[in-house]
Length: 175
Image (cartoon, rainbow, N blue to C red; front, side):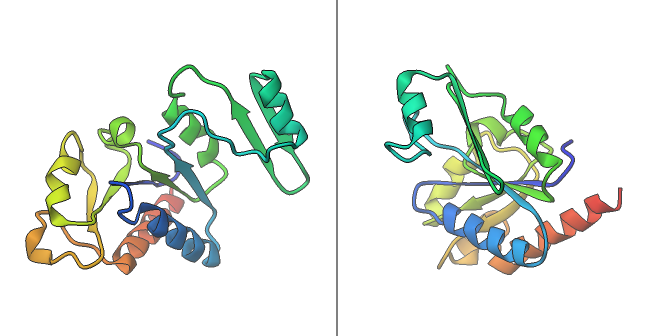
């Protein structure tokens, strides 16, 4: 069990995952909660640094680990030969935040019983494939214009998800 609640948002491309996480992050932050976000990036060769800047140049030169630090932010880029230990990453950041939101990671976190899940849909027919290999706890399904009678899991509105997260955070704070 992690030291803070973890919610994994699972869905196909363009199903609203990023929008949902962005909105939850904004609203929870405005309420005073510290939010951590883990994003699954499917293509391995991505850049978080700005081309031409020193840290970008170090990476291009072959540095295995690059850490950029200022008095208000930091970033770490480490080359890996496969997926790093996601549980370890969650543990390492969970002590600095009140809740962690994950985008994607179905193949990794979908079977974890200590991670809450919400499935985002573009259409009801996507649900059976997304439910494959997915373990509870599944809070439900979120999607724009999805008729409730077409979905075999609980259809959630945004406020349902936000309220559940706040309740999980408050329940965890009691321990």
